[in-house]
Structure formats: structure tokens, C-alpha cells
Length: 140
Image 1 (cartoon, rainbow, N blue to C red):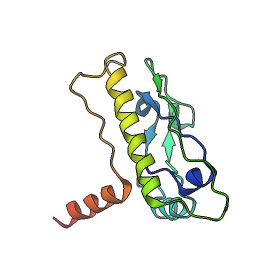
Image 2: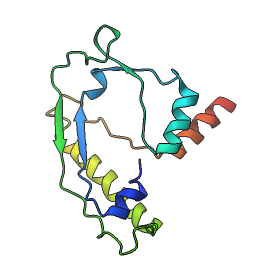
Image 3: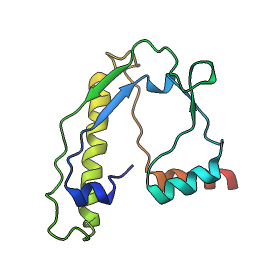
Image 4: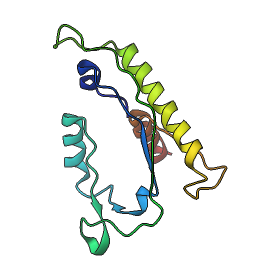
């Protein structure tokens, strides 16, 4: 997802991080409490996944081979003088593009070490685009 305006407003640098095999540690239930979760996500701009791990508890399933790849920090422009000022959308888009490129670079650099196939690609979808695609496929 895009960097939040508050990240840009506070001038916090962003460190791209990718964890291989993380999806194997929990079962994700997209449709469970979907309506309330999506409403809360829109209000807070934070993803709220519903997950279950070992024995249906919040404990993660044992997953050998977790590999965390950490990239170089992405510099965010300094905090503006006016704390209520909204960051320029072009700057937010530029930071987002750098973040996506850094994630893809991390994935390509470490995928073989993590045991993924050499032709495997990391696909990053923009959330609004993903929602539009879902609606299109339901209509067809």
C-alpha cells in the first residue's frame, strides 16, 4: 500500500522489509467480519487481517525457513514547518514507487535463498485497483 500521508507529514524514513514464507505461519480469513473490518480499515488506514495459527489460536504455525530481507531506508523529505499541511500527492506517489521497487529488488535478491522458484515474481497491487478487479470479475 502507499505510504500514509502521516508518514510523509512526519518525515519518517521507510525501511522496505520482506519476509519469505510468512503466509505459511497463519491461515487468513478474508470474509470473516469483512464489513466491519473494511469500515475500520478505511477509518484508520491500517490493514486488519483475521488470522488463526496453530490449533486455531493466535500462535503461529511452526514454519521452518522464515527469511527476513531488510532493504536500505527510503528517505522521506523533512517534516514540513506547518504540521497540518498535507504532503504533495506527487511526493507520496514517488515514495510509494521507490518502496515498491525496493520490495521487488529484495524479493529478486533473496528468493532463491528462501527456496522460491527462480521464475517466481512478486506482484504488488494497488488496493483500489485490486478492489476494482474483484468487482469486474464478479460482474463477468
